[in-house]
Amino acid sequence: MTLQPLPSPEGRRSQMQSPKPIKIQRLTDEEKWELVKQIHATVNKAGGNAYLGSGSEQSSSSKTFTVRYHAELAPIQFNKQSYRIIYGGNVYMIEDYDDYMEKHLSIRLLGVSRGVREN
Image 1 (cartoon, rainbow, N blue to C red):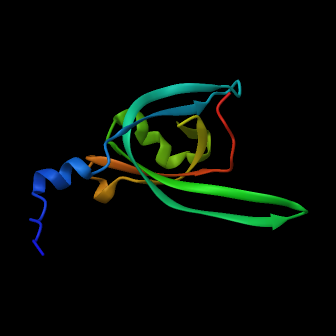
Image 2: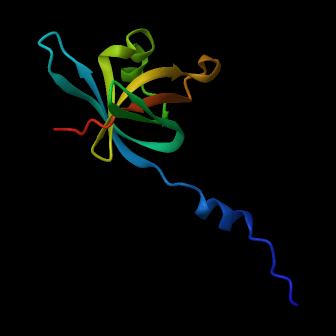
């Protein structure tokens, strides 16, 4: 039996997830969604669930979107319900905003999709 060498750090980096394009939209006073910023994010699954209620199955999917800090995104932390993320054609409502230690390096957004597609 021959032992295989451990992958080099460069090999492990290439296996890491590459950033994916996302759109962040804001609900205007006219109740229309407008594009705030189209950026790249590292996307990770945060969870999901399915349950039976009122005779129909309900399901949701949660993902964390980590993006570089942009000043245009700072208002999200105070008004999450007026913003959403479009990723892979699905709509994710923003439920959490985290600017770690307020260092303005990166922002982690928790998005929850309930099966709604972008129109």
